[in-house]
Amino acid sequence: MKKVATLLLLAIISFVSAQDLSYRLEELTAPDFIKAVEKSSKTCIIPIGVMEKHGAQLPLGTDLYLSREYSLRAAEQEYTVVFPWYYFSQINEARHQPGTISYSPELIWKVLQETLDELNRNGFEKIIIVNGHGGNNAFLNYFGMAQLSEPRGYSLYWFRPEDSKVVNEKAEALTRHDLYDAHAGNSETSAMAAAQPDVVHVDRAKQQSGVDQDRMNALKYVYTGIWWYASYPNHYGGEAWDANAEAGELWINHTVDQLVEMIKLVKADTVVPALQEQFFKEAADPLKTKQ
Image (tube, rainbow, N blue to C red):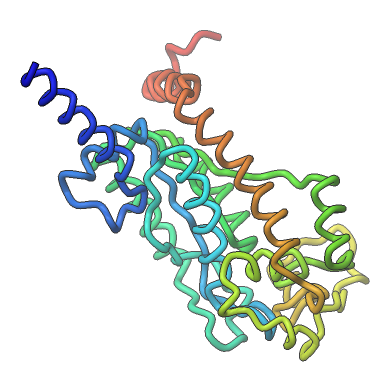
């Protein structure tokens, strides 16, 4: 009887310990890290942001705050290890604004690739990027395709949430419909008001213009890297003066719900790893690829 009671106690202690296992990578001890890799189904999230201006009302680290907020809330519901703050991102378009930390294209590529390689070396086989910075979109698309340049020991997934008309209407009813809402606008400011209210200054949202200046409107059939500066030189696109936390919670929760669903799908995914294995095998000797 005493032996049974001891085993039961050990089981309870083990269960409680597992429940208390942090999903923040920086908080894990080395022994707990091993448990976390297993508990996460070898899945890790890298929340990516940048240091850049967000109008006059939001902090430079807004994208960092939000990408990590989404990741932590999702990991709390569906256990996944969350990488610490990651701010080595593409932000050349804001180099004219104070506080922008713009690393070279070569460096941001190399740091991200080596981060993925190191996570894989430490046991993670599925890595999810949660990007909080719109300026990374083209970079991450190309980076993702470039993963096919050589065999990898992991699969890379990029979380790309979708808007909901219903959620937008509910949130905007609490604030306003933002005609621009391109950067540091109503939705982003509201989300920050919910996630990090102590560093948000909604009362400053009218200090600078967030109107699209559309200075390239005479050019047709053209892409040029100066496009963002042509529209939003203040690095602010929106009308954020009615932003509030209640609306922000709606937008955050909608994003987190999608991320939780994605994490579950990624953990269970066997298709991408299998396709990668087949692709790299065929790529090594393309003349033997069935035609």
